Amino acid sequence: MEPRHPLPPFTAETAKQKIQMAEDAWNSKDPERVSKAYTIDSEWRNRNVFINGREEIVRFLTEKWQKESNYRLKKEYWAHTDNRIAVRFEYEYQDAQGQWFRAYGNENWEFDENGYMAKRYASINDLAIAEADRKFK
Image (cartoon, rainbow, N blue to C red; front, side, top):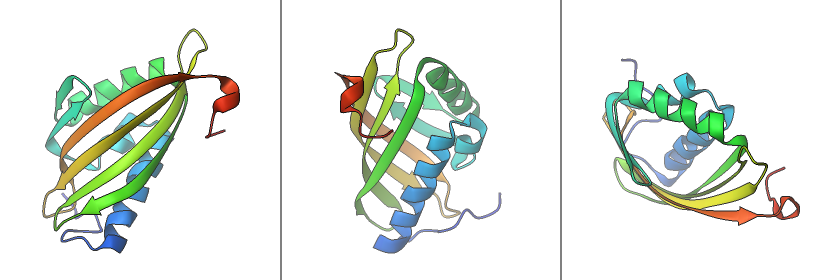
């Protein structure tokens, strides 16, 4: 696989670049595009779901975005080390019944030497909100 810049070891600047790249990909709501940032055998924990590999990532995200319409995400830098980045995030979405939610959480990412995310551990909580309380319009 071609290197996916920026590569570890990360600086604060390159960690923030990686975060922005992830935010842009997730906001595309394109599961294939998102999956290409991860290793072939990437390990995820997303809430109480454990996901292994790109094929499962694509399947998971396809199902996610079929259920979560009007999805909009914002990620923020929290911390980094050589090949790890921690982010805080929040996103908003609407369910099939029209209820709006804001999801809050933290992610811990670990990258391989070629800049692909090998591990992603996400803790997420959802809060029902009124449409008037949306931040991301």
